[in-house]
Amino acid sequence: MFVGRKAVVAAIALAIAASTAYFLYASQQKKEQQRRVAELLADTTTLLRKALTAPPPAEAVSRIDGNLKAAKAPRDPMLGAAAEDYIHGAREIVRHRSEAERLTREAAMSRRALSMHMAAASGRDTYWIRVATDLKKRVERDHFELDTSLKAVSHLLFTLPEAQQRLAPQVGAGLLLEEGERRAARERAEQHAKRAHDELEKVRRLALPR
Image 1 (cartoon, one colour):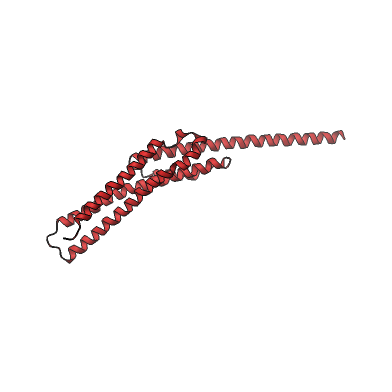
Image 2 (cartoon, one colour):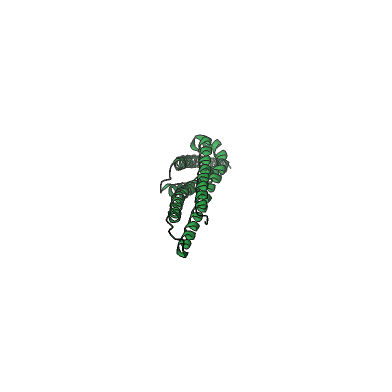
C-alpha cells in the first residue's frame, strides 16, 4: 500500500513538473513571437513612412510582403491577426504608391505627346485624326489608371486605423504610423489626384474638335 501511494505521488509530481515545463515553454514561445511581430511592424512602418514621402524603393513591396508572411503568432492569435491586417494594408498602400509614381510619369508623357501632335498639325487629314484619337485614348487610359491608384491609396489610408487600434494596446503606438502622418499622406494623395484631373481637363480642352 505504501509503495503504491508513493507511486501515485511521484506520478502527480511528474505531471505537475511536465505541466509547469510546458507552461514555461509556451510562455517563452509567446514572448518570442510577440517580439518578432513587433520587429516586423516597426520595419513595415519605416518602409511605409518612406513610401509616403518619396517614390518607394523598388524592393519596398517585396520586403513588406516578406514581413507579412513572417508575421505569425500562434501563441497570440489576436496579435497575429491584427499585425497581418496592418502589414497587408501597408503593403497595398506602398504598391499603389509605386504604381501612382509610374502612372504619373506615363500620364505626363501621354499629355505631352498629344499636345505636340495637336500643335504640329499642318493639315488635319485622316491619318492625323486617327493618331490624335489614339493619343487621346492613351491619355484617358493613363489618367484613369492613375486616378484608380490614387483613390486606392486614399481609401487604404482611411481604413488603416482599424488595424492600428487593435495593435496599439499590444505593441504600443510608437511602432505604427502616426495619425498626423496618415492624414497628411491621405491629403497629398487627394491633392495629387486633383492636380492630375486638372491636367487632364486642360488636354481635353486642347483636343476638342475645331
